[in-house]
Length: 592
Image (cartoon, rainbow, N blue to C red; front, side, top):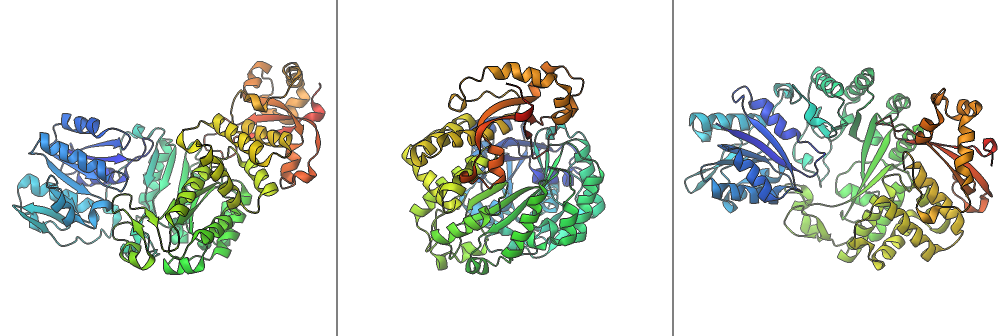
């Protein structure tokens, strides 16, 4: 049999762990089984054609909220042009209403209900050997006009029984995110999450985890993203995994973990203090700081402890912190969400992800939806439109705010400028983003795409039109952000340029010829020709002491006016470093 396992990822950079598990588990019986990944950005016509050319007897799709509609259209097309092809669906988007899927879509032959590895392999064997399908646990299938559902298969208790999906040539992972799991399940029961529907946590053995991680580290993949729902649920296990990664001397790979911050004790925090910069990323789900909301969704969070942990880890400047909020939860109105936003923003995370509640199939909040006045369309991604506590109009406001937080708050390209604006002109971060969002829509900026230089220009225009105070100082702060995030040989936009700076070109060469300056600021460039150093640095003149402004919490009342010359040294070699640029005040060493 010619068998293909496939899926549509949400982005090209993503990879699918599920289809690789299915392949590795089934290869002993079906050594020629094939996998293929597409993306939701490719047309269904193209994907259908590519699958058709493979002349498959069986094609299996891994289904999620982001790909189910395109997947079903592809399946229908395949069945029309090849009625004999067998189509199998599996994954979270079809597990909770598998019989209904079969009733609505006659072109689907089988749905795998629940955990897939054992079931998929057994189903393939039955199809090949023409055995009784009723004996395969965890499937829904057709028997003439009848739809048959077999008993649910028990979960795999020894996860090591699943062969490693990371064997052989791993070059397919170049410049991609590799998804990885060391456990399945979650110790918590959050009512918005599907993980709450499966009780308990199962772990791969620590030796298996180390073996698989070693393969990925040796392959120098870009990022390993752990999909464990709570990576630090077992302290000793988590510590052993992290210690192993450190012991491997990793230089080009970053590791992303979803952790519960209030479970990080002093031992772990002390351990994290000396982690190599950029090696780890932590994602922390806050969701809300409204106690009533947290109670009703069964989210056990000690926000005071969480804040202490985040603040301390942030002070280490070595771990990227990603905090999540969800809009649309029960008892979370617009004003309550504003407080949650400000509470989390005050922790200064590297990324604040503002998501919107999705009523996933099988989740308790979907079951209890009428209690909270949830209004949504019963189509993927099942996102809330309105609740008893928040109107659709307020949701739309938050959508624009979310877009601006993503553009201006999360990438680090505007970090000093945004803090300067908020600290000097607004009562809270939310007030700024709310005002900026209103301006953004009035100017219809939300209707077009923007590159990074355009975003700098739009923020400059907003400041001039809405705030219009100390404009020269603002431009200097904006210029600082631009140069810190531009990499080699940046070219300033016209609105940031100073007049009469031609002297900088000559003076820069003289500065770099002085060995004392090289020793003080650029010691790694000893005995390097000036023309090579110039490509790694930038020197720029400012009207204000912007570095001192940062030290004084961006308070413009304490700004020191007077020309300052700053040296920007770019770190383009370290692929996982958080801080890609160091800035030095070289005014006293710079000869005009």
